[in-house]
Length: 452
Image 1 (cartoon, helix red, strand yellow):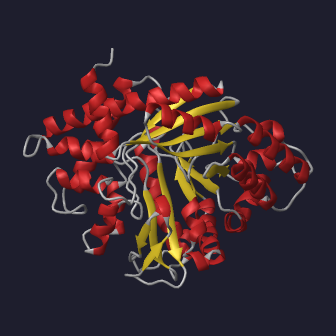
Image 2: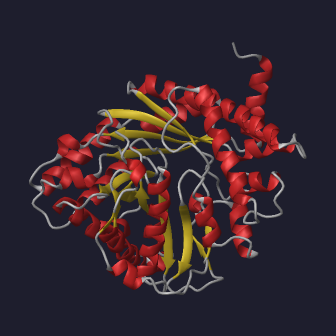
Image 3: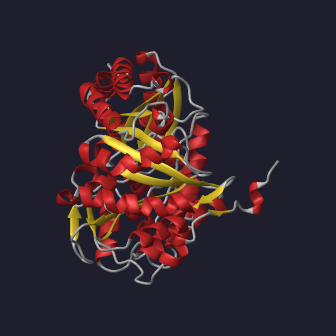
């Protein structure tokens, strides 16, 4: 039974420490929407999404009011569109992106994810058309998010796809130059992408998922930071235990909301993703947590160790609170969306190379990083290859969401607004990687992938 002390503690976490449900995401299968005529396919996609998600936003708002728990976003993820559209007799899937955008606007969600392709072992015709459609699709829509999985531990790294994604990212930036390359903020390149991730921009409804499902993403960097302030100067075993207990409480709240949304919508409950996803708001920063452990600034030596402890303790606390923990569940380190990360970049304490080291132990990877607009496509591809290698070798999800903001140079600032925040333009290694990327082919899976 919940006692009065626990209730008051939860109220304090919500009221003063930025605890929230970051997203309720409805996953919807579009596999039965395939049709040779792309106009018919678009109509079926629109009709199915608006039917299934008709009450999603209202349900989230009702739960928010009744329980007093902030639910920041209501979102939708769909079957990777490359799979749905492959039967269409079309040379572009932009009309499907527009259909997704219209559906998202009709039901009132802020983002819809799944304009995606899984190409870690190679591309089908549908995959190739979808990837080629990404720049125009993201430039022509406001709520559609896209992702491409280019590597897995079992398959290795598809370097042809890696090379292609560097060019696609540059094209997407150019097509939204007036908005700082905004399309790239809605595009993620993955290794080991998971099928039940509720967070954007990388959410999609995987082929192993049911017809429809509710996944919830919980976030509470401010709560963890506040908890650590009570154990200043104590050993790391105490730090780890404190984070575990805090993650437990956060997850229990997430499970309550997920189950309630599932019941009211009559849709199966999938998972709670316990990811510490920051926002640009002061007091809602993963960087603050790492600095509370004793670092003068995130990026200082010791940052990777502190992040490893945080990520592990979050997962341990979460799995004790729910048998449905899934998605990514750990700590995100997006630069533009974290006030502490932004401050560290601006004072020169945090570089892309240090962020890459941190991605070995965090939830995802290089996230919401702005680089100069003249950064070559091959350099972006090489950054993707490095991150993919970290994911493949360490059997974890890694990702790159990078914005070569047109017309910018190091030291400039790009403002994307809202949760996407403000990105200081960071320097990249100036040395040439084009001959490496130009080889193409496939980097084989590591030996430890042979587990059977």
